[in-house]
Image 1 (cartoon, rainbow, N blue to C red):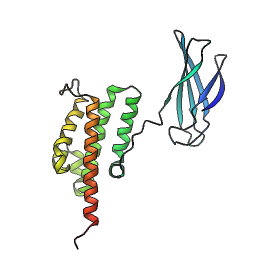
Image 2 (image 1 turned 135 degrees about the vertical axis):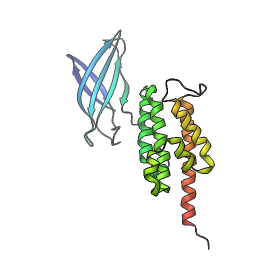
Image 3 (image 1 turned 60 degrees about the vertical axis):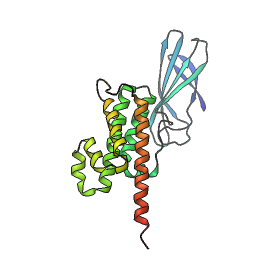
Length: 218
C-alpha cells in the first residue's frame, strides 16, 4: 500500500492506495482522479476514484472513518476486486471464453452483493458453455445449435454420460430467472456446485477427445 494525502471538503485525509491494478494486475501507484465523503451517523465514508498509469483503467476504493472526526481511516473495499476472477481449466478457457467471461461477471456481481442478478448470470454462462461445446464438435450444426433451447441442446449434444446432471443444472439455473424457485430446497450455492460438476464433465470429455485424436491404433 502507498500512502497519499488528499483534501476533501477542506479536510485532509491520508489514504492507503491499492498497489495493484485490478484490471491489468500490474504493481502500480494509482493516480487519484476524484473523491467524495459521505457521513453516516458517527462514521464517515470516503470513496476515491483511481486510475491505473499502465492500462488507464479506472477503479474505486472505499474507506471508512470510525468515531468521526477523530478516528482512524480504514480501507473497506476495492471495486472491481482483483480477486473476483475464478480460474478455469485450459480446456474450458479454450472452448468457451464467453462462459469464462460471463461466469466471472456473475461472480463479481455476487461478491458486490448483487445476488438477485447473479443467478441469471450463472444460468447464461452455462448456456454459452453448452452451446460453445456443441458447436466445437458439430460445426456443421452451428446455426441450428444457436437457435436451440438449452434443454434440447443438452439432450442432443452434451456428453452422453452426463446429460442428466447437465440437464438438471439447467433446471436449477432456470429457477434463478423465475419469480419463484420451483426447487425450493435449492439455492444459488447449489447452482454453483452443479455448474462445477458440469465443468468437470466437459473438461474430462474434451481431454478424452484430445487423446482419442492423438493416439492412433498401431
